[in-house]
Image 1 (tube, rainbow, N blue to C red):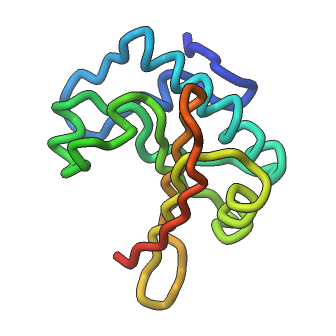
Image 2 (cartoon, one colour):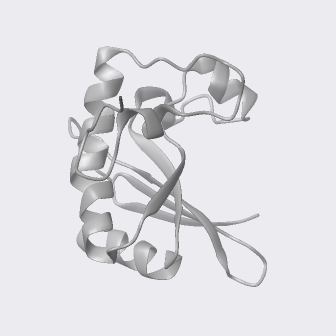
Image 3 (cartoon, helix red, strand yellow):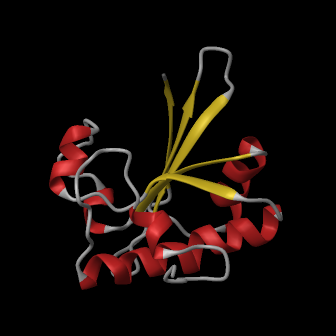
Length: 136
């Protein structure tokens, strides 16, 4: 049975990995994932009225290394998620203009099509509202 964090997000989807490595969060990671879902992901989902597909949420050190994540990635703390949805541009603009977040990274192709979005949130520090675009 799935562990519901918010109406539309479960702990399992925020900790899944495509690597064949156990990825079990500690209590503080679950707290951070809960804050991320409550303050960013669920409000975005409610606004869009469409599913948000989580590509990556919490990553332990082994999973983060396997996916070539940054050594100081907020995924390691359960404070970040990478996702896709049907209306990526609207999702990006809604987060940027209406939600509190620490970091918002939009990954785009050369033709400016958004491939995925990274968003992080930290309840216990000042969220920087840092917005970055990267081309992949």
